[in-house]
Image (cartoon, rainbow, N blue to C red; front, top):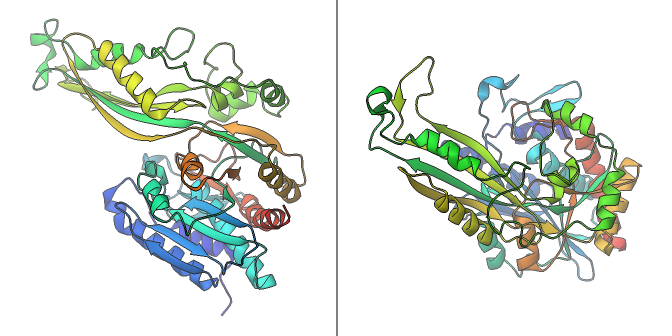
Length: 445
């Protein structure tokens, strides 16, 4: 019986509904972790599933030899929820290939990218019987909820996780075929705010005009977060922001991206953002405040004349170096309390948080990563920061004292976190080649 192909293995991995944020998928998450452990063991690596207060962490390693560099390859096997389900062209956990792209939840974020590294190592072991470096795989099941238990895990396993550098493929490529090295990520602070009014929904005709409407007051509160120029209006929000360096702004101006392409990609009718900065600078190197969800009152078809008893908004704030997530959370809470309209009260709940990250792309490890990318894609490498957040990256630096190389394989239209998430077959195959090139470069550094 022949061994399964790389695509077959990716499909098996993608069929697990490993949605970390939904309790009903808890057993799917555990089963996915178990599948990974067996995969690693079948390759000849030692592997174990480590329980946490949340979802398991999977560790695997080859036989380490003294004198070799050690690289920790990080990824996550948990995925985002699939809602709205009706917008998927195919069931999200029944992967299929359409026009050269693999469609499934987790195809890009992050199962396709981490499995490319895993299979790259397997191919090297089958071909050479050994690897040129010591490898540790750390694949977690809580990245999509902010990795709440991973810092404690790193601290508890600090000695066995000692390494020279971390490698992650969970970021993006600037455009198809353009090798991209991401040297910075934004941090994040998440909050949920409830605006509470009367003890129950009220008839808007009988009580309207005398009782504050929480939905209206919520709209007023949210409007205080920005000024007319698109800047965040929270006092002190920009105090610690590290300015862009001249070489970055010049480099980014030369990248093959345009506002027109951004509009085509997003389908937005126009651009809007903080004045004085290009769209790439706004997305990669400036902090933001965003409404991710908002609701309250009657949501059905037609009218129901009520004053809702409460309304809610889900907020996230993307942070840049040198902003501190705890400080920003405190500033935002103070702002919301100060601007709370009369007649209602606030209930503010903290969500996940993570620090921003930036490294020197011209460092020896940065250069090694770029050589590996160039060898894989045979094109000059684009140096970028990315607007998304991987909270654990700064934690790797804090706990293990090492930098992280971010070698993304996702395309701008991958639809991560959205219906019809996809990953090109050619990028999956390139990821396996990238792994081989990277390990070779690290061995020779």
